Amino acid sequence: MNAFVFACILLGGIAGVLAQAPLHDRLERIRADLFSRPEHLDQDVRDLKEILAADPRSVEAHTLLGIAYRAIGTQDLMGESIAEFRQALDIDPSLVPVRLYLARVYLDLGRAARAKEELETALTQAPGNPQLLSLLGESERQLKNPSRAVEVLQQTLKADESSVQARYYLGLALLDLGQRDDAIRELERVVQSSPPVSDPYLTLGTLYLNTGRAAEAIQTLNQGVHIDPRGLELHIQLARAYRTKGLLDKAEAQLALAAPKDGAAPAMSAYQYQQVELDLNLERGFVKLQRGQLVAAGDAFKKVLAMDPNNEQATRGLAEVNRKKKAGGGK
Image 1 (cartoon, rainbow, N blue to C red):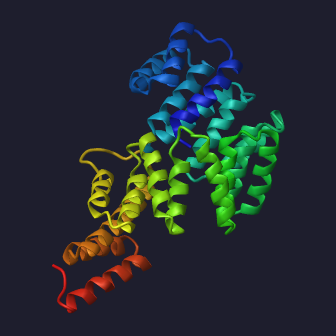
Image 2: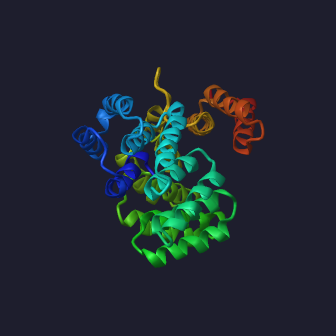
Image 3: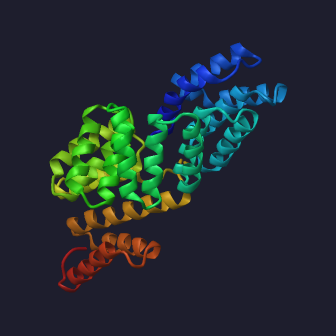
């Protein structure tokens, strides 16, 4: 789930439970920025640091700073985000919304066991809370317990049938269980609700593509790109969909949008970005192969195999390049 949107959801709950802090007007202004003006994040961080210098025990300032760090999204600030939430909880351990947001950050970092601990602690304070149960289900899924995840998420939807987040996580858990058609149905219900985050569109679009539904994939992935124009994996999968339809110019245009920009640090972990690079080169290889540009295709597949020597798609692609070269085709 998009970090900034998730912050907005939680801020409403946090505002109602946090005690009044000093410098109330500045905190109110910062909270409003986090709701609606992400371009002010750097200034908000500076202001929150000033507030904490004057009042180190301001629970609200620690919480808002953790949210700001998470909304910026760069890898080096993830630890800082956790530290700010931890400081808020050290001052007031009863803050369920803060513990919920901390669990979200742990999940984003792939630390599902820590997320589960935070959520189970929070559920002792707020039994049956749908947001807590939703993230607990996703924690179970990431811990390779998809059957348990489905149980928890179905329980969540009984408590709140409108929970888009729970339904999205349910779709992922069903997919992990190999129940692809059921997963597609759940994800279609999510997308039909027009969520303001791109992840469901990417997941459903990729599933459409994997099941031979390229036209539906293009439509769904384009919806995701409209929401998140900087979503690298969205552009890569959209390129794959266009290639499948033989629209190679459009495919290459999408790959250009997914290529790393000079000096631009991706807001993802090193592992995640390596996976994006792998997918980008793999798709570039297939586009070049389809164009008959064998040298460029071979170079792209070799880059994939340098990152993942056991990649079967790149191995097959490179074998096809070599076969065509021997046959005297391409360039």
